[in-house]
Image 1: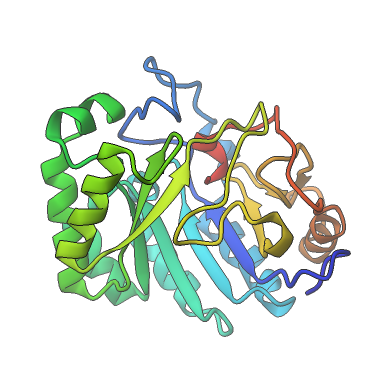
Image 2: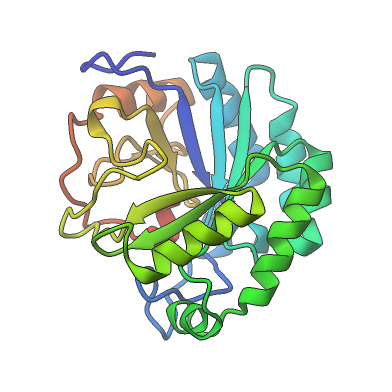
Length: 266
């Protein structure tokens, strides 16, 4: 599928929940958020049926996101359902890693191919401060479990403020090099102000070559993270929703006032 700027759209990011077991300072307020009603969250059946249509139209890469996707009850079943869709060549997940020790092997068996794990500091106290109480030891155990399960390549997402030369970023890079992991550095973004940058070690933020659409946990298909355009897939036929999203995909993101990181999938 080509958009009006001749970009090939072949990547769908699916947020399966707005819930998370961390409260990272750049993502969520300390007191938490007003959660989406369970009845408003897309069912696994809705996600799978929409994804089938998306794949028929050219999507070949699917990433499961959140919130934190591993807190969604039955997530292994969803992975298995998606993995059976003919045409998906790359099925992955972004996670904070806290529950990976428990689920890594089940995810691999169900058909997940690889994971991206968020890790902004190797320092135990700094990690706890950034995540407001997260235990880095659990994340490290999750990383090891992912390695043992063969969820490769394992990519580490590290948020930076201005430079990859920041002390925490350098320590994360060293940790990745020592443990056979791929480091990706993501500038801290502000959706409402339209502030973002190109991901180092990845393709995010490169508007000229953007190939993705995003499906929120409440069923809104968005052509751009930094845009208020969204199509309710419960009110529009799936194929038409895909066409509308591709037709309205902007040349470059600007800002968004209707969604937040925790409910759009990043």
